[in-house]
Image (tube, rainbow, N blue to C red; front, side):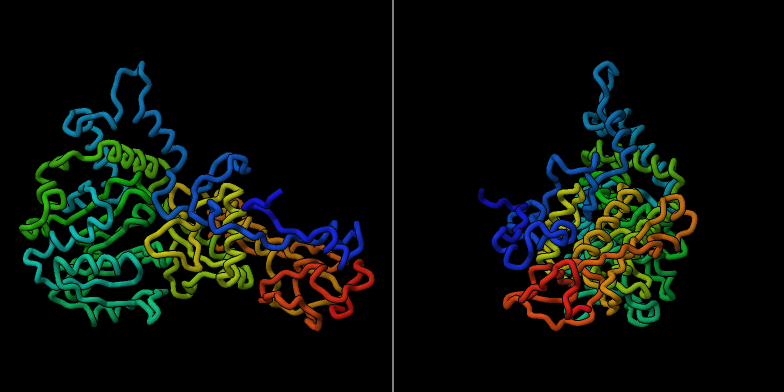
Length: 525
């Protein structure tokens, strides 16, 4: 039968007989599969978000960077409130006129809940716009730079702030403070002293992206009020509602957030703007992007996406019922700790570009690579995740495919779901890695189980997340295919074998074979 995309290519019986005795206990108990040969057209490698129907979990675990899933309670409320049964004799928000009194009540409730959850001061207006973050890349300078010749300072600390600058060049004169490395990567944020010294004090605004989803960089607290008094503009698309905003202390003039990460479905963007910044729009600003025009029209200058507004309101109600921003931030911290502790505790098998000591690791998006970017193991990891219903770690982007995968930990991802991912990461690493420690004693491999705390324990004491306890050891008296450590590599390898620190050892790699496969080869004693 022809091999399928999921076929694991095992040695034929004749090939096995060249290196081992038939029906040996070694082969039955310890020989592990070689990495799969995977078609580049495998759904998992093309970014498919539809796992096989026979995948184990009852719920797909969606780690997509956005759009993504909402919490189950929110999705249930959307189903019941937005899609009423016929006997209820009412219309759902998707069918309501945007100027009807029914939708007017939905809009009023959503705005009120947003102000309450985010503790928005009264001097700010809340708008619902369309066009996503890219629309705001243009709308911000169009509304705050009336002639197009004004200066605006942009902090470039990743992919999205870099894109914002390119769009802003059409509508203002961007002055850039860049944290990009020479190779285009970004793993840190400019210091406050550098920003204070390099900002153009005549700028109409200072622009910052508080969480760069691609780069895994997050400002866990916004910048303080700068000496020059330039108002802060914040792209908070991916971390809005995950932490408090110091509206006045940070001199926030404007903040925008796409809904499709933490507050709803794609198709709507929230803008929070301070009133003193209104009335400055470039005369060429389209009405749909003009903040003042839409505020004067009570958010319904054009046909607002009624369903999306309803969903945002439901999401805000859920956040409040779950304990508000304080609860959301604690949950974000423990999920991120779980993920990063797994990466840091993998002895280099997994790695992330942002150093822990930088203080800027994103709680929303954790980038990581497998075995230093090894393509074969990365593809195998993605396929095995997909087969388990774990999706969204590599999605199609306009930036191509690099070595890093991303686990996005928005509100729709629970701690328990993050635990499923990290448990599999540990399992995969244990199966495919060789420890860097060089310790062999009487051919005993020490296998250390990694245990993660339950959610209540993690929430009670954040630093306990994903600690590694060495509670028991399993003695393997025969050569393991993935030994924990190697003392001597004086053996004959196959000519075409590529070896790195993450390579696996199997019984059929050695020539000539030991006479007794039940004992350790002389070279490893």
